[in-house]
Image 1 (cartoon, rainbow, N blue to C red):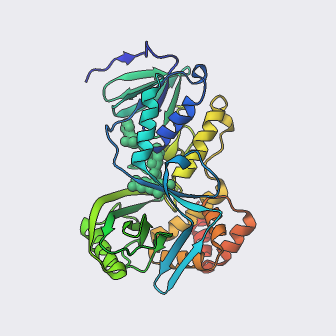
Image 2 (cartoon, rainbow, N blue to C red):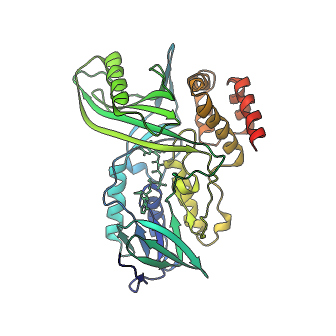
Image 3 (cartoon, rainbow, N blue to C red):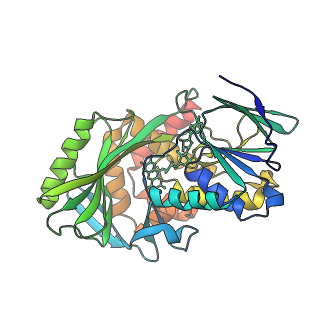
Length: 387
Ligand SMILES: Cc1cc2nc3c(=O)[nH]c(=O)nc-3n(C[C@H](O)[C@H](O)[C@H](O)COP(=O)(O)OP(=O)(O)OC[C@H]3O[C@@H](n4cnc5c(N)ncnc54)[C@H](O)[C@@H]3O)c2cc1C
């Protein structure tokens, strides 16, 4: 390995961004809106030359920075369980779909047009700071910078007494022979499927009457199931619900950590954490896109006074997430009942606000009073005992 100190002789007071995923790209876009003399040049360190496609969805009731990339919106969402079939209009909210290919194409074009950003495909290894100057080590070089943003987290060594579960999924983009989908409604959760060691549900995004993403999802302690488990569930679900010939156009799979790690806004060396590293992934839902949007927009304004940056989640919501994580870890068979009560006994706008961490304490009390009380009280007791 050839290690040398690369001092950016051709770059002006560089900022380094580690990881060119959802958060790294959103941050670049924000930084490029600022004058050059405030941000300096930007070096993006990303280990992959090409990043697998993802579907990024979120609900919103206001225009967002990425509206122009939203290729499908649903004003209606659905929830299903064994004997319950619910669908509601969520206006003024809508459920938005962004394809990560469109997202990356847009950002790479932005970077290509700017003389301020340089991308290198290297593997980040460590970062250190001495007297305000950061040294970032990759598998090939050392780089120095006056500011470092880090989106890379190591989930392989969970701190003791933390919970680490996984939301893992495997889905097919299918084209059906017959026009079978109700393209007006996205199904967020359908628990009417075979359960397993975790809590299993289907997620269905109908793009047209003939095309949809049908995705099997699990909340579980295991990082994944064998591929045949996903494909068997998908085949039987498609057969049962639509009973039509179809072709699989594309597969999407992935896993998202569900954890109560003590995420921090800065890493040990003082680099500014962003994205998953800053706790942007909501532990109990896996949604991150909108949280990253909010955080990176804040960062742009607070670049010069990081102390004012707010944690992505408040302690109150971290506590609620903790209780549900304990249930998913210890009694995953109760998740279906909790979700059924959440969606059948509450107004959905309140549920969306609650999941966005945007609800009032009164609204939260009302939501919790609709859920299995003894189960949640038991979690509170376990949580207090474990502290
Ligand atoms: C398949 C899938 C679907 C999802 N769907 C949704 C959704 O619908 N809605 C939603 O809100 N959220 C969704 N999420 C969650 C959300 O997209 C992610 O959590 C989000 O990408 C986190 O952003 P990030 O920048 O922190 O991490 P990432 O986007 O994962 O970016 C991290 C980047 O760092 C790079 N990297 C990692 N290690 C190194 C290293 N050592 N050196 C250099 N580079 C490195 C990676 O290659 C990656 O490009 C989904 C996630 C997945 C996997």
